Image (cartoon, rainbow over all chains, first blue to last red; front, side, top):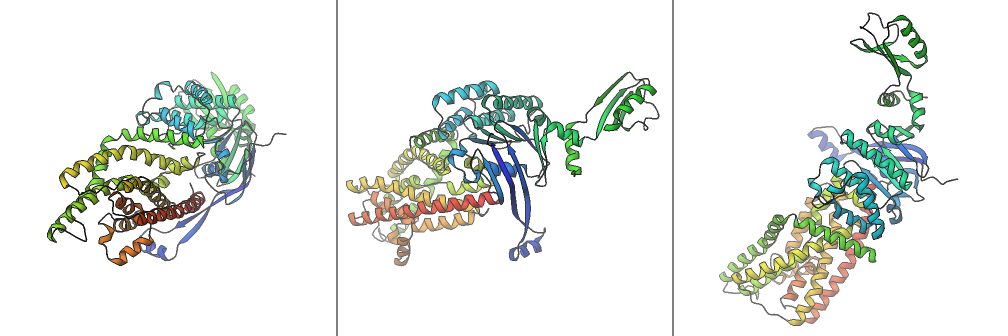
Length: 326
Length: 267
């Protein structure tokens, strides 16, 4: 059996946050006695990732996603529990470990602002001690995949946000890390660029067999890249399994879209009417009722067209966070 | 070790490139470095004239030599790291540095070295030009001049280590400027930036001997001016070495504790 690329057991991170009311009196009081509150950012989560797996790490803001990624990349010490990545304990920040991982954060700059990205890449070549031939080959591949050609020789400050992000990603992958942590890699980018970066990571995973753990607000990222998702909420693990199973489990309704001549008076009997415009009716129907409702609609009304759809994935995720199963 | 040399070479190339993007800032910075010594020089020139041509064994020309040489020594030993760390911690750029498989101090050393390579020749030209105005009295002692080179290099190492350690205070507090100010005041008086240390009262000199500041500036400066005996020079080198040893320990301890703190509260 393969040893997992990541093994996380009862991982917990508690932040101590000083807290005080607004106002002068409160700030004077806080000089004497500080009120310290404990925030359990990550609360006893456990999971494994197999080598080469691409897993989506989902949760609303403040769920503990970034804290977990920082613990796995060695930037944060866990308060308790253990994390083992590629056989290393991340918090020790051993050089052999750091050489094999990367953490891409949407707003993090590792490129030197005033000089062309290529110069920053050269610096990374030295820092990661990459043999010249390997470096050239990887650079060539990344340049091609991300279409960096015209960008490499311009000072980074003259690049657009999307161009800069592509260069950041390339810089983060020059050393061909086996373990890739992606924290909102497509944040702030337009749809085309998001799509390009998604397909790039899919490709990178295929080519190098790297393990990828990805957080994103854009469900499209997750849908395109990850078969498996891990959902956390308020530091606790809510779900770990196939994306399809998640959708199955949490989408209790389906959406039926019916094209009619006009909007009829009485539709409530069929399900919850989401909208009706120019005869195009959108109904929300309990999953179990869907076949029967569809049959009734076809029998009762002059239907021009009818489709049954799964609700958008965002809506499902929203429901996951809202209702907490069990 | 070859790997680390490569990191230095590349880091210095990067620093050069970045620095050349800011030529105007470089010139402004040089002027600011020149201004302080020139002001002190003018003050002491006036004082010397008022007290009959000599103060504590220093003539007008001696003061001129002292402060012009000070420009050079200060430029070589200066670092700006204390102003930068707070920003790095606050803005999270330190996280990127922590993810790299190399100690972040190397980037700072390389950065400082490359900036000296540009600024030192410029400072030398400035000091020589100002020499035509202030007419320093120079006594060049060949052996002392030769000893000056390692002395000023060690002074840079010492000052860099101490300032790098102090810069790490940014891990614990967001108000590092008070600490920086205290340090700069101590440096100003105890390293010989305001006046030659021999002009200070005995007890201040005694305090100065027990602290590292003197060995960061005054020692190489006096060596350059030919003010030291062989014995004093050897004591100076010994003191520099001892303080560098202390500095290395401080850097190590403070860095470990700092990173522990950083990774506890949220990088």
